[in-house]
Length: 144
Image (cartoon, rainbow, N blue to C red):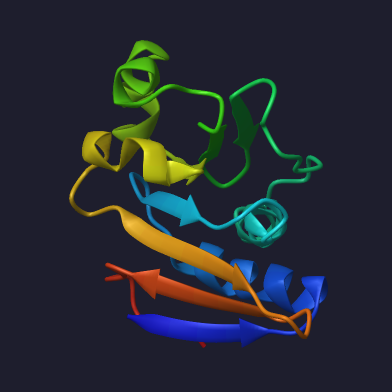
């Protein structure tokens, strides 16, 4: 397990850039954390590393946002879903097992539906405003 601490949104975005540079086609990131933990903030950095110029916003209401750069980025928010069956019914297999990177916010609800190689990224807001970010199941090299 890897652990990082960021003190500002800019540092969180920079960590996202470092992660994004190491991602490969087919990688799935299961994001976990409370409301306003920084899940979309770190996704902004990942998108920048993938040469995506679009503004990254939380896909809470549309469920899935697709962005295109060096490779596709599928940004999903499953907060409003009841569980795994709803997730499967969205047709997400083509994304998760496709040519891009999938980032899934509120992934706790659907972990049983994700591949075993899924990278688990948990963001915990601290009382001082910083974030503790842990990454589990990471096999993509050193995050410098």
